[in-house]
Length: 107
Image 1 (cartoon, rainbow, N blue to C red):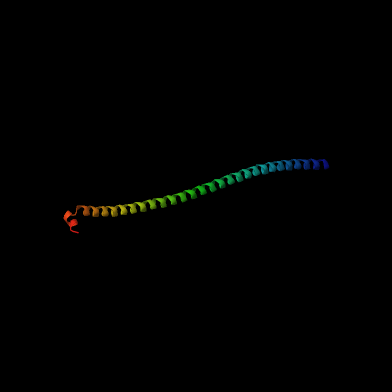
Image 2: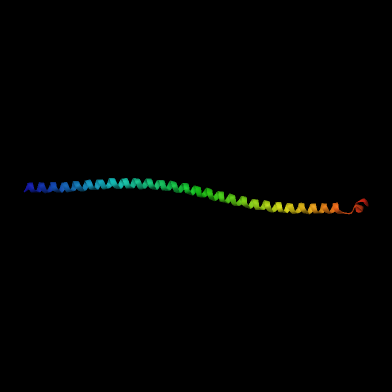
């Protein structure tokens, strides 16, 4: 009767050993997958950070470009105003040149 008991116990130990081997393999696989997922996460985080910096730089550049365009428009308006004033002064000077010669001599 003891032989039977020993045989049964060995079969159970073999089954237990197989289950432990499978569990160990599963743990190794899961660890590799976890490591791979962590590496992918780190790469994705780095890419996201880089893209956020690029977006921030583009926004800053866009704001600067908008400000420059506004300054250019203001300078154009000022230039037009100066041109208008210069034209008025030239017209006034032209009127002085066209005044009769007798009127000048009288002074």
